[in-house]
Amino acid sequence: MIATVLRTAARPELLSLLGRTPLVRVTAELPGPQPGFWAKLEGLAAGGMKARAAMSMLLGARERGELRSGAPVVESTSGTLGIGLAFAGQVLGHPVVLVGDSELEPSMRQLLRSYGVRLELVDRPAARGGWQAARLARLRELLAVLPDAYWPDQYNNPDNTAGYASLAAELAVELDHLDILVCSVGTGGHSAGIIGPLRRHWPALRLIGVDATGSTIFGQPARPRLMRGLGSSIHPRNVAYDAFDEVHWVGPAEAVDASRRLARGSFVSGGWSTGAVARVAAWAARVHPGAVVATVFPDGPHRYLGTVFDDDFTAAHGIDPAAAVGRPVEIPHPSAAEATGWARCTRVTDPLRAHHPSSERNP
Image: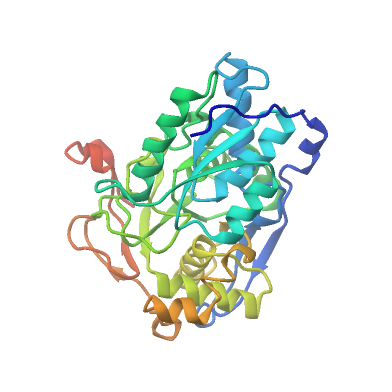
């Protein structure tokens, strides 16, 4: 158990590295011809996409007096937010303690530690809530022994959402028009943070959420999930259910196939989340001719060289990219059928308020 953490000096000059990521037109076949969509390459930013949220959460906590100067920051992560918090911790001068799990890739463990993070790993999922619940249990133990420690609580912190206002502002400047926005959903932060400001520019903008099979966010049963970075075994309060026009659940085969096709055909790619949103964005561009479609690629491919891009890994986990389907199965309601592969639903429901009509958004 960690009892103390070292203080760290602030490096405010690093803020110049935040955001301002490239926007690229993707026309790769996913899996067949498609007219193209725009992708914001957040993986090319220092600290990755979630550096925006990390900075927002820590700055908000400092302004409210919840985070004292030099105090440690403790959070649960599957990797991506951890990189963002490592960045924000260096900028603001806060040591960072992260709770991961034994599924965290060795390369990500090494990278986080290289950035000065103290990394705690849980070795088994909780019976209810899986790895996320196990990480949160360990996190609470750490909070009890680390004086003045601050927990951002990315799943429920509105500053997570607010951090993506800058991403929305960049898209609004870079695009003349936007009809459809495709976002992966994990904590719910970036989809909620982008859609509000962009709908003020384009009120008719449609939002498509992309979840993982086995995720319970949109009302499906929670199952063990191979894909990391999107999906959840809990219900984050940051998910803006009423903002979504439809949701897609994507399986590992479709995500792997799309990520590999992106690498071969566009030279930009990423992991599970990037493959999943690319698959759905290409579908949206194909079925809505003339529509301007955009999405966000949360990270790049390097973290996934031993998983998404490794034939031995995919074979060991029964993933056959060649068997990936070209279109989603339609289901009428999230509880009507379990999505075991790519599925689509145009009735979006908040599972915690499913009995209230106001919890559903229909196209």
